[in-house]
Length: 245
Image (cartoon, rainbow, N blue to C red; front, side):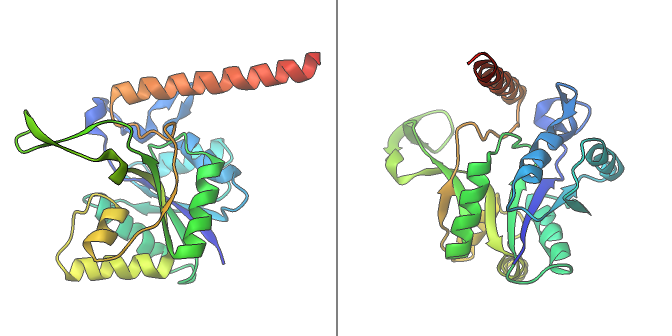
């Protein structure tokens, strides 16, 4: 049984206000998508990687993968009109090459800080239950609103989870789900987990992290840079301790 990573990099990232797609923005001389690819490249349980890529950037992606030694990247697939369309393109292509029972972890290319622990737990829960959605608790007070300006009600935060990626599935199951969704006229679900629920399926939770941020705005990019700096500082401290001890 293979464990596959499917990175979704089909979006243009207009909210970032940049001239190039946000997954290809360079941070510390490295594109964002390479940080994400490296997380799966390093993970011992991930066998192969595929990327659903925005049109016109496939050659750049392959060149970056070669430069940074991403040897597990085996498939570059053209993105679709929206997220659901891109994911469907990806899983349908993987179905041509892998077994129905293989596990696929669908992950946002613009979540570059996913950890080995998150990936491992997503694989574990998917193997046990057939799917896994990375989540974190909802720590904020949640208010209900009708017009986006005022609220007269709240919702218990202990009954809510904030979803992230990776989201894991058996390859045959997620392909069949997308086929049934098309037949039902569902074409623009927000995420794989929402598509599952819209199609009457239950989902299981795996471990996420507050650090597993999605780079959507310029502010998110600033947080990512700060997390990288903190990570480098921690690594330097450990090395120094080992050297001087």
